[in-house]
Length: 441
Image (cartoon, rainbow, N blue to C red; front, side, top):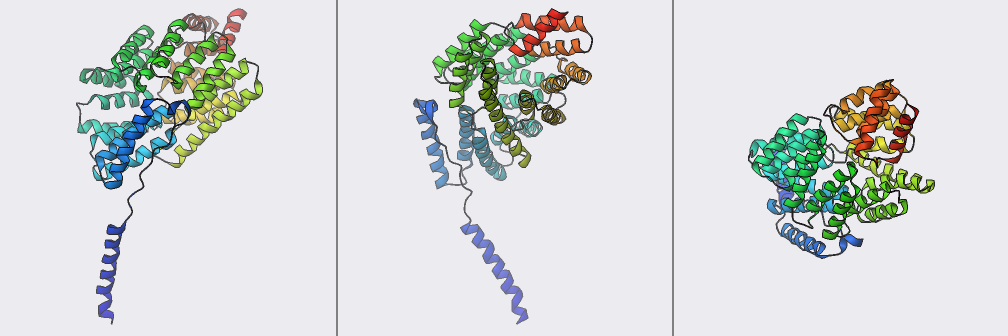
């Protein structure tokens, strides 16, 4: 009897493998979620539904259609930008991309999309590694150099980022390449040059598309940062004319009204933006506005909502090496607003450990130490934050306050004056603290 056992076991195993092959269920295809409110209005949503519906039908008929998977992943990435629902759409897109890359490990477009998703989720080192894989396959594509630029910026490797932006512009000068130039000029303290490049980016795009109106609102924010509220407002209103209900243009108008101390109008703009797109930043801005408008209970509620959104993202990132938005820098600022200084320091250090060369991360850690009264520590990090000679007025004012607390009053006052001259509408609490120090000295 025993001599028949081995052939029977082999036959059983072969049968089981065949059953798995013939009867395995294909991986579920992520579906499109309904939009609601203002985002559901207009022809764009109908076109999006029709296009994605067609791709879903293709995949139901042919689950291994990698071209359809790739197009659906790209559509979901864009839907995440439009709706702000990155937790759902980024995960859906990554699932589709991983399916493509399992079969085609050197699929250039899939690698670029995966790198882009990693950057969106603040997995910057991972995004850089995947983008480097992609550029080795195709060194003649502009988009991949944009990804390399973004990754190097976020990791604080600014000289390398400039090289990547230059290559991107050599291959294809367009909205995406001009916008990278603008951001790098801003980092290196050239606001006029940054405005010029972002204006070129806006003009290179098609009016009304999300990417174009993002560039236009970014241009508005550059005008805001230099105290030109009229030009900023003009850009935001034009963005809303081209793309009605665009949340980031509404938020821009909210900041303009905040600068004018018209707090009820500012609150109304941010509430509209928040009703349209899921973005913790809107709750964060409302925290400040409710405080300025003498509504402390609403301010406290918004602060907790901002923390809850960010903490959920951070937990997802801890649970998933590939996905989940690292949000520790944002959490550090959020905890400062609730005066939870130990938690603020904990999250600022977590972000610093990930990317110690980034100037924004160093500014965050410096400001947390300043708020804790640890002025020597604050100076260590603010010095690193200033190394690109950025002229960001918030950064300059914070540097001035830190210098003053460390006994360098003349240097501190000069920095505070420069910040207020660049943007007279600087964040009220920061500007007030700076003005108090100037008055005392």
